[in-house]
Length: 368
Image (cartoon, rainbow, N blue to C red; front, side, top):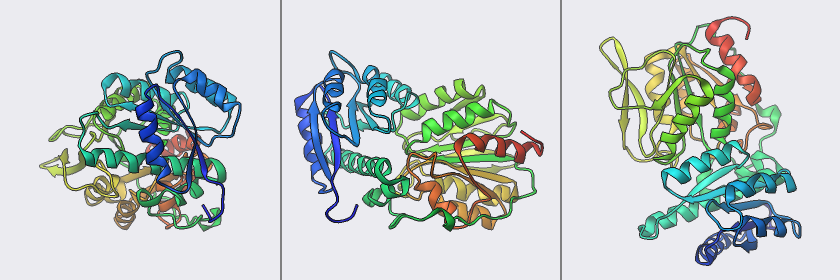
């Protein structure tokens, strides 16, 4: 956001006055953000939304009068294009509700630090919340790349908006893939539900997914994806052999890689330092797969902040593998896919609704 531009307008919805105050102070430490409303429940949020423009709503889940999940579709109906970030404590119930909210139109989520949490976790939460609010507000106002530009330290890739003509495509591979790897972040769950729902188990190869999510969330994401895709889907387990037709999700707080063990390929989990400020991160997964599969590796990079996956995709294409990215128009934030699309790593850059057909054609070598 350029100097002198209007600040991003945020509304905080939480039944705790203490939490509302903490969130307001955290966000307004950034001069590009203004908290224009702070209310205690979903009904009050709807009323407030009719009175003034808002770019992003930070929405609690459990509230009296009207809870977050009930308020969400009403807010989106009242203000199409509004960006909503769900905020909740990290419990299995709240993680499940957050995933349901993402399927219902929420753009992203943040997990509140526990009341007895350490200072560094509270600071990490503030950084995450601020970065996501700025990215989503910028995307709502001026396109995904604009939001990425303002996302600060969590999104180092886009110093400036890159026009669509800067996309450089590689020739599509003619080698039939034996494995599919997917990387995603902000907006990723929605894109994964759409993509794997469209595929409906038609790819009889292993599918590995690294989605930026904490523990508990990744467990539930796998359950939701299993229902959406009709495929077996679970968090990857250390030492587990890869099997065709199964989806493996990187567990929260663990990098998921693959290694050769005799004639088998097996999952390897580690807690090496975060990469691109993330654990799990996409780059370690891709670095491990490229030498094992070479031209038989197919990678898809979906919506997300930052540039995680870009270095890994460089390794993939150097080994002869193929990359497809989600386009800017259908991405919540065009950071991760934009990074690979504009660096010349992709064979295709497509709307989310067209990616399944492309993947199916590559794997089956037949029309979708």
